[in-house]
Length: 240
Image (tube, rainbow, N blue to C red; front, side):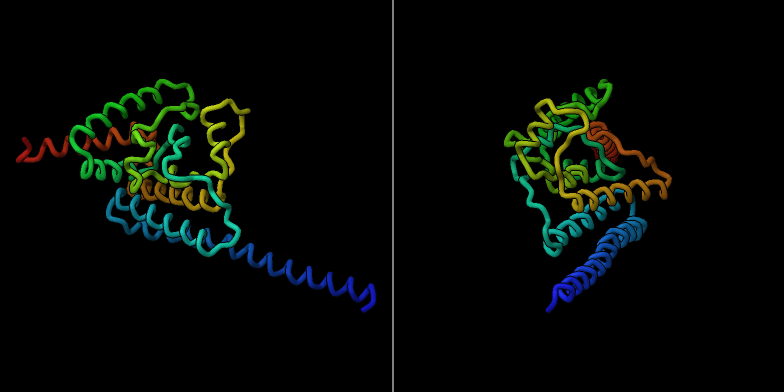
């Protein structure tokens, strides 16, 4: 093989692989197009916005698991049970999410635990209202247990599910330390995108139902839904 033959061989090989990679890149984007469409269909058929939130979360969980299982070179995360730096960040929730969480709390928390949580939520909601920029707040989540584990992990918000990190040290620097403006925590981009698509789909589902579509601060949203459940129970004929 002459030098020119070798050059031609390698050039052709690179060109062929490049064509395949461009094709795969388009197909990869197609995954998210299909996911967006699936969210839309499933949430439109849901019986209410709370059910839509459950369905959106289930679909996001399945998609995220599929990426971890079937898409190569997914970044390893440093997240683990009891790792709670991100649980000190301000969290917003899309429509339906707080209702699902409130139902879970009503079913699984004792009356005393619900009252304690209610007071913590009131404090957190007040802090968010009074803050010039709530996103800069660093407050322990009212739902975080004494063991630094989420007390409603099964129904945690999409924002919490979306967050991943490659470095616990970096999380602590960003959340508890002083970092330059604009810096953040490196995340799994596909995992984050899956959950943001779910969030956008829930906002759209709310609009289609004539409901408020804005995201709300977690503490206030959960307070509102817990109070709604308590009011409904108080109005039942056999209440008290």
